[in-house]
Length: 291
Image 1 (tube, rainbow, N blue to C red):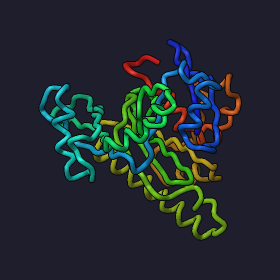
Image 2 (cartoon, rainbow, N blue to C red):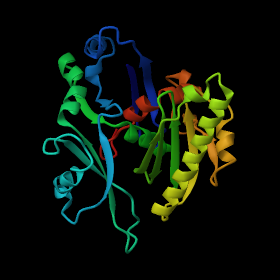
Image 3 (cartoon, rainbow, N blue to C red):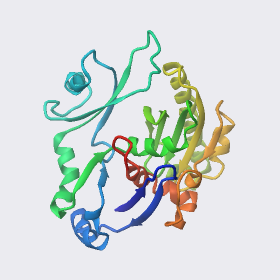
């Protein structure tokens, strides 16, 4: 279990005031009970993340109904997308920035999960009597980090790569626009077999190329400024290889330019940032712009 706490103050960089990891020796509930006192969890607004496979994200055109009726209108659009009862599914709707261009359908992303999956995610907090403010998804945690790195009025492609796979997101004006996932991972790229490493890197380059082409076709109104790479463990030369094969600049993530790490000096190391990216992104969650 990784705990991260971020404080936002007007006109200042978001500050990470706490980052720590704990082994789940007797399960998540026991760890939360222990940390409730040791880390005074009752003093914080807690957010947790769903795991991959526990939720779905699908894109639709926004239905022609009032905003407060969109969730129910879109619920029935999920019938052919999910394999759990849509009647009781937990649903949220995210607007895709459109710039109000005439003739362009307004798109939305629908995040959904089975009620039982959300209850299971919240259960350890309830059992430990730790108040849970929100259940979020990794794509939005990654979006929160990407938003800090965006160039004004330009899209940002963010590629996170770890031992489980890749997540590639397009964000624009602080909003999530599109997501692509893949099975290529750092274990394959750091294996002892040079041929396998080369093949996986080639597949990754091709996936990024295809994603950029797809984004350009679907979201031609969003000019992409660059691709930001966050890999854990670090894969030497990967950023340079991507940069040589795509038409936008590629840079490795360094959050020290947009966040304050004075309370957690270990985060000045970019690999530590990449390892804890989702925890930091979850802690960056805001409601209506407030910390």
